[in-house]
Image 1 (tube, rainbow, N blue to C red):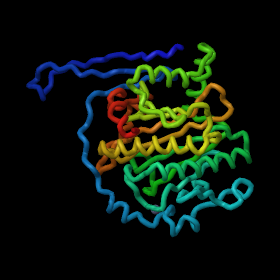
Image 2: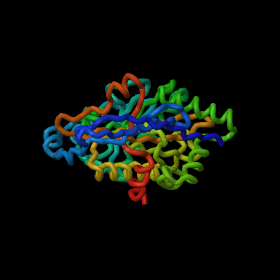
Image 3: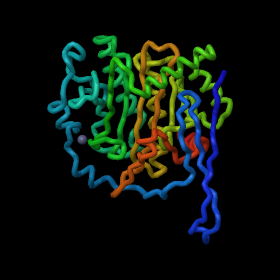
Image 4: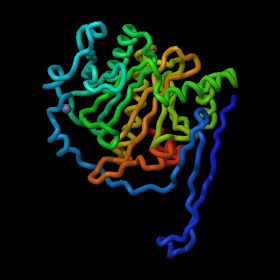
Length: 338
Ligand SMILES: [Zn+2]
């Protein structure tokens, strides 16, 4: 097993006006992801929480959107008859249909619930169970029609800081015959690790994180939840589904485990005063050394004059930052998974 947790301590000395111009030292930690070797910065200072934002006015004004019940079956697109003859995929309250503005070969939207707006603590495991089941059904049916589409993402952008233009909770399901950059990095690094060590990186990682006990959150069925050593976003929580590379092979129990972990993470975010997030499930079939990864990060909370958390550092230097020490996040979030 060759998993290295590499880190560098940087320190900035200055004379602080907050301390009568006495010298203070501000530490920053640079961590290297053990798989991709990508560097992240763990910043130890944070901006004060702006407090909870009241969404009632915003929700009231935008009610009756395309995804609301009175419009969804009249105004959203339908799948090609060869893929979904009935036009849309519905399970429980979740409804899936093609995205009118796709960004690849197959782009779909899954509307998660009837409610036009839900806060993070109202997004329950049941909502995600139904939503993920619709997403997976779309992936299964599309792959049966076009087997070359091996690379899928089930993603969620929640609220404006997360990049969503529509308030109504929904998932994006995107499939292509070629991987995204992130997928290619994960696949290449997982293969190189296997070539060198003869074992799966993902199984080794779960084992070592369990032994260390600092970042391993919980096991829900066959899904392992943990905090990344080198996060690529704020409050990053990950899951690895044992024995699967693609969501297409997940059983009911595993879908329920994923849904539970997502809802637990969102409940924690809500209690921390956060309200916006991004989520992605990287689903790739036909790759022996890869294991299905889910990643959730929080975004700067929405509020009037809110701050975009992608600065020149992230967007022009590809140097990603986290504003919480991963081990601290693990300690804080663990009770939410109990
Ligand atoms: Zn709506």
